Image (cartoon, rainbow, N blue to C red; front, side, top):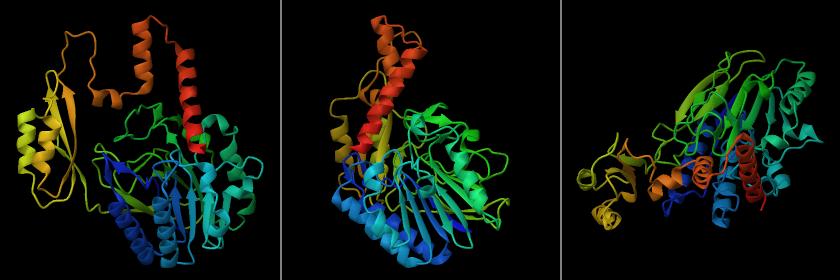
Length: 388
């Protein structure tokens, strides 16, 4: 079975006020060309199709047109599209019936009573077990293993078995993600790999934007990463993964196919931070004819000059680049006990750490129980936002 593994398209994402429709359309056009050339049996889109649970009509049209074009590039191919934590699980399935006519399986919510809805058979090729994002507290114990066991009962011919999930797996490299730790990335707590069950030949993961294998001892657990950078901190190549599995029990063969972005995200300087005067000089020297989004990393003693953003925007005005923001980094003062945050630093701070700091300031004991309640409240708010 041959699989194109992709995820985290984040269609509708706006970068510091700049519309990215042209880049996202360019990415979809590249997907069509890859399908035309590679002719996979299955096209897996493993969550975060949209950047928000309330995408505009124009963004939804871009997806539907893109899916039709991807289908037409290889009509025999099955397309499996699961919801991620940025998507609305219920809205993901609204057009489930007409999608099926194009060989598209839209899986938005856990089917605890009718588990077979998650199992997609690819005749004479293999099986796909498609699981969308769900909060950990809503996933029954042993859910993944039950699905794998059902497929094992049917799989008398020893065909490849692929499991999908949109989650954080412990041991992954979360480079490029804000508010991330080994315990939680992007608001999703980490799963132990063992919780995903046993019996799959390839675990196709979404959510983490940096493509990678996660250590399993079998070289078969993989994040394909996002095809288009969402953050300036995603300073690594972006791609899709082409996966081939000969038969059940055999090691997958994976090829990365890079996706080109006509307007890359560039940070000046490329490493570390510069003084405000040095950063202005780097911006002034940036080539006029290169389309890019620009961020300036500036080291400050106290605060940036009031006119800094206006000055930077003026320097970029006659260039093809788009100035986004100044990432102010305060010089470390070891003698200072209180940490004063810039607005940018505050926005990038983990909400749990902010709550802990406030609790300490207010004389409140922020113990493990309170931290657990705080995280649960955050998860409920995020879940409600997805289902609105």
